[in-house]
Length: 255
Ligand code: ATP
Figure 1 (cartoon, rainbow, N blue to C red):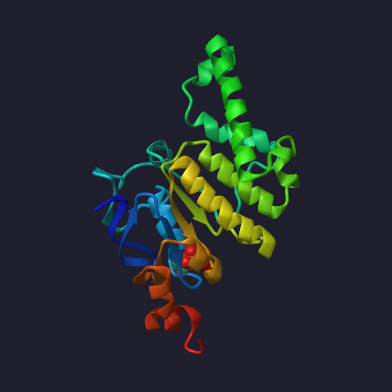
Figure 2 (cartoon, rainbow, N blue to C red; figure 1 turned 120 degrees about the horizontal axis):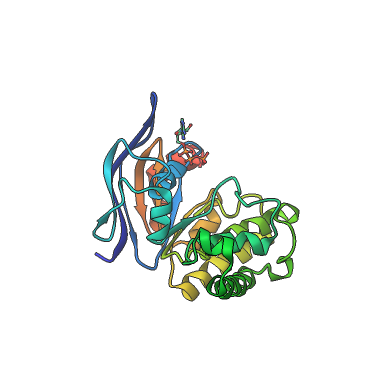
């Protein structure tokens, strides 16, 4: 199978709450995989496990042939899995450009000593980081705000900035947690376009959590549905739309 990540029978419990129960899911290389489900279904918990923030109580997690089970978040980032957060996590007092440069530093060689003594290699690298970061802001459509403090950007632009910072780490898989939250309809339309463009331009695989089902049906190649910590369906958007269990669980019996 052409999978990049395999999640196998993963469970996660918080006290008495079973956030994930025996969930298996493969992410195929180059796809846009959607993760939907009602509030509290376990979507973000799955992202947190995928990116090393949480360790599952049981199950396995593979990146190709490599187990990711006991890796720390920074190790997973270095293996090429980057993410954005449901609650935006930009550095508010830094400019947009500086925010992206921070992400870029995850991929560079000059260490702390280099940063302190600023030798020639460090300076050259710094210039390259600045240039590349500027290009990434251009890619996500906010280059005009390069020198704006992150806290002064609109909500939608902060989400784009988070994407640029994640791209700066040169991921092979990018996980987006509710990228459209807080965006108006016009911004949502351009977001779908952006995500598709990123896939082509960076040869990315994407996993997206989003509550906007219409957006997800148009954007994703495949969709997995979680409900009360269980995966209740997985398939092409048309199959998901017609799945009675999804309709009942996700949209409610009324739908
Ligand atoms: P939403 O769409 O509302 O973001 P979600 O599908 O992402 O929901 P999760 O955030 O993964 O759901 O939460 C799944 C369940 O696990 C919920 O009942 C939540 O309260 C619980 N949970 C998640 N993280 C923690 C934690 N750190 N400590 C305790 N309970 C948690």
